[in-house]
Image (cartoon, rainbow, N blue to C red):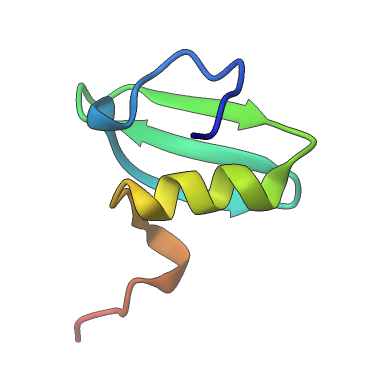
Length: 62
């Protein structure tokens, strides 16, 4: 299991986007938080495995 200093469980996360080296994450509460980590790939995979929506990969509906 991925471990980090990220203080929120996956169940509280709604969506995310990676901007350069910082994750910008929307919580289900409506709050937006930033998270920087040295292990970007592992954190990204943790988000994907936990079905957190990747905004960058979401298709625009026209």
